[in-house]
Image (cartoon, rainbow, N blue to C red; front, side):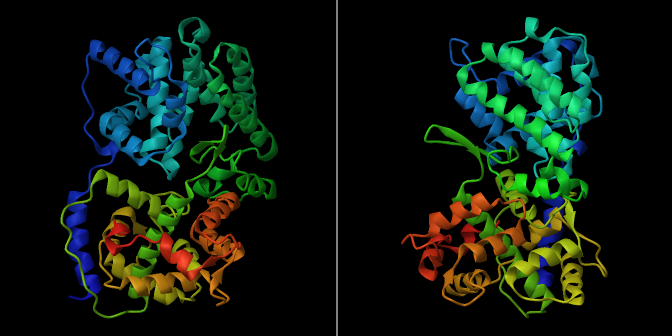
Length: 432
């Protein structure tokens, strides 16, 4: 069966099977006592303690900044409906107590960053969270010091407002002597957020979500892993920095090329291909992994990508496609004429189509995408140009780590053999 026909069959099944988003879930009906239990559950989830009740600060930092798909899935599964209800104002009464404020902050400020990661909806609760700070409570007298890091400090540091940033830093300076040493990293986080707002007036890493032009200073800051707080926290050799595991970045890159190969087949009308019948519907983990790939295409994080966004990603292959070819590919993926965009669901279905390429053919084709000058080695500049064409949120420092991971002989470049060693050994390992 032709590639796009098989794709249509899978897409129809996928649309039926994909789980509803949190905003579409049934809202829970809860008693006051049950709401109190929910508040306790939220706070216990975020503030991990040992059997004596002492905060396990390092585990907490891993939970708060690790940006794990498994954590995101657990939060969506356990609390997704409550996040939706909180964002619609359903838990407004929680503001009457400090612990209620803390629990509400977790639902509207923290959890959207997990559930809606890599989309503009990540910040959908920030304005509501800001209203929590104005509640007439003496936080330090009622909440634990580490809880005051969340209310009011984290709320204020998420605001693109200089006055709020300064207020949050002042509060933290009062708070820090009561915190365990491991949490003193928040001084850097809060002070750097303040500095960024002073320099830019907004957070550069949010610009692409809001369609804003990034300033020269903002672009410079985006290249500094020490202030890229939107990236996972990495602790090594007694120091902490923000960035992705280079091995995971390589695998994410391979998944992006998986999608590009299929899109190119649609654009060039490559004829019949084999197709692997899916054994089961997408699991939550597969959906999360697919979102990681999708974000390279969905540049503005609005839940879909258009012709311009797709053109940008296709440029990373080093081949030139006309607008007509790209539109043709989008039409066949969406199964409509003049498709304006490709949704996440359509993209997910696309990744299930088996291109039936041999491993050797895939490796050689992808290596050539990077090795632009045909030298037989991928230089740092070639790697940077290709990766940042795919995903401009990847920093130069992260790309340097990707090259180091591959560069077995330490010559500063990646050979075909070194590149091959980084690829998953089986096609199924990189298809979602």
